[in-house]
Length: 165
Image 1 (cartoon, rainbow, N blue to C red):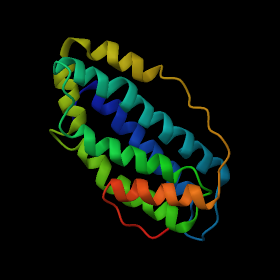
Image 2: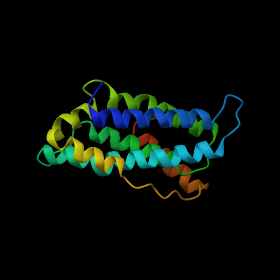
Image 3: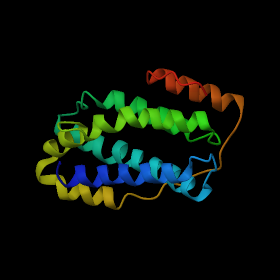
């Protein structure tokens, strides 16, 4: 497995996966507390990558983003959009479907986490501290309307996904 940054973020993926599984049980009942923790946690995780990790890698590449960053940003946009409306079974299925594709791009050997860690080199401990102390994300209530659902479908399409919501 990768270095410190890789382990920290991959462990967070596992924590988030467990929260999502707990939130939506096989019986179809929703654990609102676990779902709220998942939602806030995923938004924070996306923020850590977008605001700390991607800029650190871009800086080390002389201003050029990692080639995979564009795909990951589209996924982040789709995931964020899916967290706006009240979760339904199709929304949860879409989140799971995206994460099934997205997380390996970051975690697999040679993936984004390893690339970033290699680039930041001596700054690894500083970047790790920024990730560890990244602030909690303020989560607003769900919004359910036609505009939100249309925007969510567009975000999914931009990212290359075709989930029925």
